[in-house]
Image 1 (cartoon, chains in turn brown, cyan):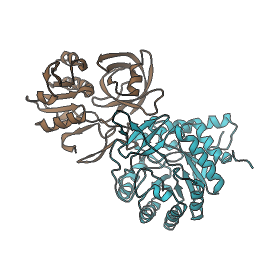
Image 2 (cartoon, chains in turn purple, yellow):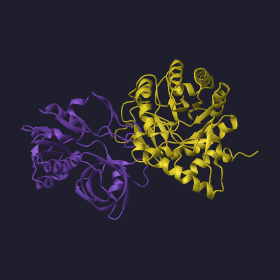
Image 3 (cartoon, chains in turn purple, green):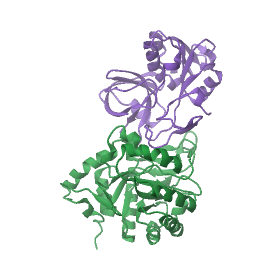
Image 4 (spheres, helix red, strand yellow):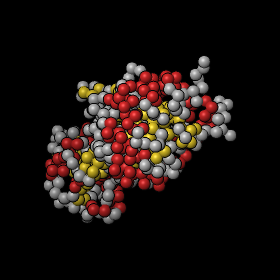
Length: 241
Length: 305
C-alpha cells in the first residue's frame, strides 16, 4: 500500500453513465487486478475503484456512476488532485494462465481485465476477451482490447450489438484458463459454465480497503478472507457461493 | 520540550495516542506503511473464546462525517490470537499492547481475560462490554450497572494486569455504569463504543446493513463521546481512555481536558492509514501553541470547581 497524491489529466465519458479518469502520479507497485482507494471531499469513506491501466506516472480508472460518490467523481475536471491509496488487494496471478487464457468481463467488471490483457501479452501469451454489457450504449473499451491484438467478442443482453445474450453465451471455445470480473450473478454463471480453473475478482462494500476493519470479509474454502486484502481475486477452487 | 507521556494504572505510554480496537487489526497492515512504535500503544481486534466469522455483508455503511459498521466481532478466537497473532504482532510492535476482549457469557470473559493476562506483551486489558453488533453478548453486559459490575468483578479475580471496562454510549446513565465498574474493582474506564444507528437504501427500500443496525463512529460522534468522558470523569476516580470520533491532535487534547488520560483513535485510521501517526507527530506542536508543557497536567483540566 502506498499513499499518493494524483492529479487528474482527463475525465471523460466512454459509455452511458461510465467515465474514464486518467491521472498522473506515482504508480510504483501497482499490479493488474488491484484497486485504488480514493479520498473524495465531503465523503467520509474512500471509494475503491479497480485499476484499468497504468504505466510509469500514469493511472487509468473506469467507473460507473452509481451513487453520490461516483457522481462527485464525474464532476471533477483536469487539474483536480486526489489523495489515493494504491497497491491494494492481491491482483491477478498470471502464472497459471497457460497459452490461451480467456478474459471475461461484465459491465463495470471489464476495466481490470484490460491491464491484465497487457500483462499477459507482455508475457507472450495470447489472451482472448469476452466483454458483456446490457446494451450497445453501455459498451466501452471494445476497440482498446482489439487494438492490443486481443480477439474480442462482445455480448449484449438486449442484442443491440454483438452476440445477443450473456458472456456465458460466448464461452464455447477452447481456452487454457480464465479470468473474470463482473456482477455477482455473472460470476456465478461463469463459474458454472467454465471448463478450466480460473480467477474471479469480487466486489464488496469496504471500510478501509487495506485489511484493517474486517468490513468486507467473505467465506472461502480456505477460510475467511478479506475481499480488500486477501482478494479481490479468488481462485475458482476456493470460492463458496 | 513538551512531555507527552501519560500513565494508565502504572503503564506509562510515550504519548496518549492509541488506535482503537477493530480499526487497527493486529497492527500489520499499518506497519507496512509506518513504524507503529511511534504510538503510545494500540488496542488489538476484539477477541472472543471461539473463532467468529461475524455478520453477513454488507457490514459497512457511510453517513455524514462518519460510518456505520456491523462487523460482529470477527476474530480468530483466543487460541489463535495467543499462538499466532501475538507473536507476529510482537515483531512489528515492541511496546505493551492493549488486549481487547469480548464475550457472550461471564465464563467466557473470565477464560479469555485470564489467559491474555499471562501474555507478556499485553500491558492492559480492555474488556468490551459494549459491542452493539452481536446478540446475547457484548452490549447486554454493558447496559446495566449490575451486569457491568458482575463482569468486572469476575475478570478482576483472574487477572493481574490493569483491567479497563469499555462502555457503551447506548445507555441512559453511563456515569452510573462507570461507577459500578469502579466499585467492582475496575482499574479504568474506556469509552465510548459506537452509537447504534442504521441507514436505509432508497432503491432497495431496505436497510443497507444486513444486520439492520450498526455502530456509528467518526467525527459525527465526537461531541457525544466528549460529553460522556466528561460525565464519567465527574463520577469516578480511576483513569479514563477516551474515544469517539477523534481525528486530530486537537481532539486528543479536548478529550484529555474532559478527563481522559489516554485517547483512542478509531475510524480515522480506516480513512487515513497514517492518521494515528500524524496525530502523534502533531501533538507536541499543538501543545506548545497552547502552552501545555506536560500533557498529563491537563487531564480533566476543563473541570473547574
